[in-house]
Image 1 (cartoon, one colour):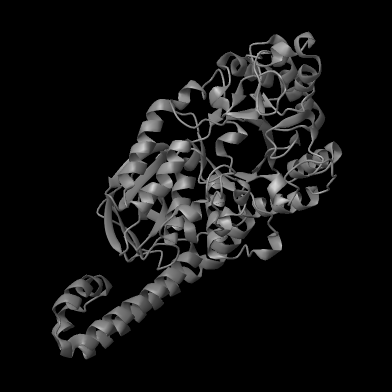
Image 2: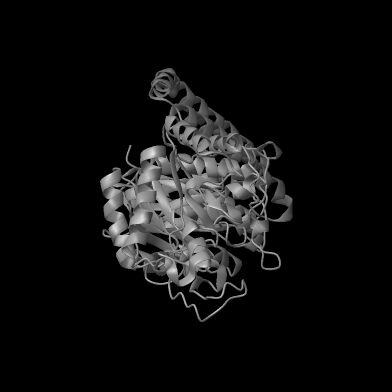
Amino acid sequence: MAWYDSAVFYHIYPLGLCGCPHDNAGEKGSHFDKIGEWADHARRIGCNAIYIGPLFESGSHGYDTIDYRKVDCRLGTNDDFKNFVKDCHSKGMKVIVDGVFNHTGRDFFAFKDIRENRENSRYKDWYCNVNFYGNTEYNDGFSYDNWGGYNLLAKLNQWNPEVKNYHFDTVRFWVEEFDIDGIRLDAADVLDHGFMHELRQVCDSLKPEFWLMGEVIHGDYSRWANGDMLHSVTNYELHKGLFSGHNDHNYFEIAHTIKRLNGLVGNTRLYTFTDNHDVARIYSKLNNKEHMYNVALLQYTVPGIPSIYYGSEFGIEGNKEKSSDWNLRPDLDLADFNEQDELPQLFAKLGMMKQNFPELTYGDYQELQLTTTQFAFARCLDGKAVVTVVNNADNPTHMEINLPVAANKAVNLLTMESESEEEKAAREAANAEALKKALEDAKNALLEKAGELVGAAGEIKAKAEDAKQAVALLDVAENSLNDVAGPAVVTIRQAMENMQRVLDEFCKAAGVSNTMGMAAGGNVDGCDTLAIQDGRLIVDLPANRGVVVYLTQE
């Protein structure tokens, strides 16, 4: 059970966040105070790991590396970063950085030596297919392999022992000097597998639980993420399903993706993201912005390691413009945002759940119910379960879901607040004495409301015997009572809602389940009704909302 199993990442693209010049002309910056402010924000919303990338000195966007042993001067100094890592570690946060080991920029020392010395360069075999009879748009008088068709990014020869050892020494440098906790391998899908296998061995010997994650777009992720190579890879397949499955009202796509990936990678936890520095912001991709609520619930509760791309917790938008990615990497000021808004608060609650409920990390995945617009699944562990229920329809839905474990208590985790053991003990002691009186008051209040119902509509007098009969009557009354009896329906609804609030407030304060069998959870945080009846979880969800439920035995 390593730290990264239950990690929640916050991904910062520092050159963009800090408003650095797009081209590196040697202008020195000092921005780690700002990066630290955002790291503190990430911790407040439940993240326990920071991914900084890219970090190394580069010529422009960060992936045309010039110096693998130096922090980009536009951001600050090596000492600035060292202090940043220390500060993060003191607050219980891990730090990983980008490792761009597939290619370099044209100003990397080895490539510059080839430009200067051509055939006589001792580094000519550091790059793939260097051809001194060819040429490029840079008119160097030779050609070479690149990444993605961009000659700005010259492809390294990972089979060359000198290249491999240079990269391994780079990793040693960042671990021994800065105590980083992991590396994200850029373009891992085109890296040599033998290189990644050896890198894993080096990293395992350097630092316990050092994490290797790779950028992989398509394919069988287990080819890269396994016990011999990387610990995880980017889950682009689910990333696509999270927005298209909602835009198309097709939860079958998301459910199929989860099952397919579980079959491929088993217990390997993939890096689960909704957007990053290379793709449009999730909020821009969603046709219905209300779907962001359920996207967040799914991202944190399906198998995987969730990651937030800076700013997306506030619902910012961003699309590529004229083949440029800089619009995806904006300069943001934290003071312009409110952490108390609904969306960042949702992420904060989900982050707390991820770190406090091991079911969301180690629990077995079990699909419970699936339609195009409704989806329910459980993460089960040691007889307990966390159940996610989502509705992407534009109207409310009623769901009755078979329990995945034996349970008599259902708790809406989105309404829970964290408390210390001392606070919990004090709360339980204070509420124990009030238990009997509160229940008696609740019963009396229900009888009083039942009396009001009798006076309001004689037709339903016989069915206003107690709370359960009044609840059962609601559906019948709303469909069959005539216009004259309309006020009776309103009275029933108001009476039961008033009664429900009394019970909910008491149950929340006392820390007990709703013993009268009525709906628990209220119309807050995605759920109108939540109860266990006859071995089923009963959930009423508003349009485009969901709930995360903890099932247990009292």
